[in-house]
Image (cartoon, rainbow, N blue to C red):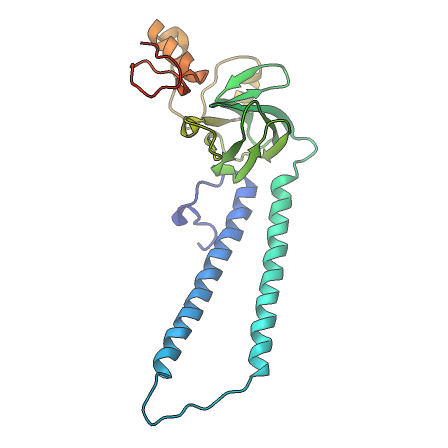
Length: 260
């Protein structure tokens, strides 16, 4: 229960093996901190009461205690070295992608994400990836600094103009996973969202052939042919990120001209 019930601690779902080991380390540090907080604060309160000033009582003066000094030096040192080694192991697994990872280009700009496959296909604010396959995102920015974060996979990296950064993951469950920009990048920073959609093997093959696919666990999405023209236009505006600067209500505060 200590490690497996991560959801009970308010953490996102564990979508990758890296997310599992990341949570193990996080929960260990959390409960270790709780233990020492209780130990230190509880001890402080206990001694404050036990050895409070009492008229007519003179406390014994303690010069030193070599055993106690060794204990509180050696034990924390061992703990810190163990945490460092554990953290380094998790970090290496997080940042070192397998050599056979599938690469997808990610281009961030105010205020959307474009995903480019090796066949030239480009998707905006959504990307489809196969289940149980290592995937590496090679990322860059066209304007300002952004930050690409997938909470379910516990991966996050700045996306910087003029250079490439990477994240990788191997999704274990089909479904949708939310992407956030976590570096303030302008007025519509909070709207810079995307979805990583994980597909089973058969659906991934269908996607590669250009066929429409439904993501397991996601709400069904109506095809454009089933929509009215205004609905198609609204979906296109959303997909291309136009609503980051424009609106169709005429409300004040939009960066660009309104569509109304």
